[in-house]
Length: 68
Image (cartoon, rainbow, N blue to C red):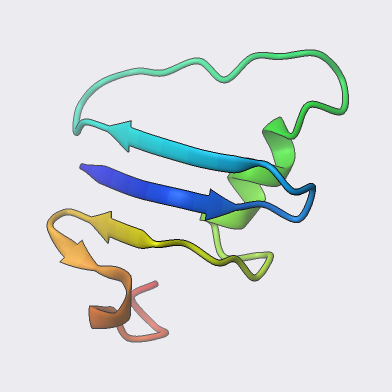
């Protein structure tokens, strides 16, 4: 499970996100709405500020750079 609270994107938007394991999701919206920005931020390509980030029950700071 991926859980993100108050993710501050570079475009100024705040995102809350909770995705369960084994489930499919669709990310849709008009051009320029931040879809790629969100995915790139979650992948670690952009720096981000968040109140809480957990993946598979571990907080972000518990992962080594190699795992992340």
